[in-house]
Length: 74
Image (tube, rainbow, N blue to C red; front, side, top):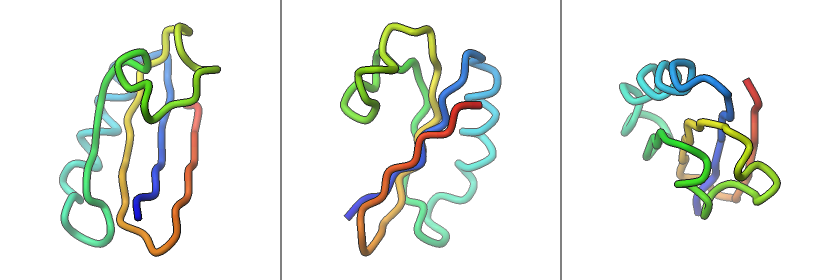
């Protein structure tokens, strides 16, 4: 199963820095993937209430025994 930690921000620079910091951790521990982009391009991961609001995102995907879903607005 996959768990998600999603950072939403109005700054592409902040989203990029979060992705860069976490990319080096992929494969160690439970982190299996990091994605970076515009919320409107990641609609399958982010609830519709956040679409078309000008947010950028960094999505951390973890291997987990039980699914969880956390959204953090930075």
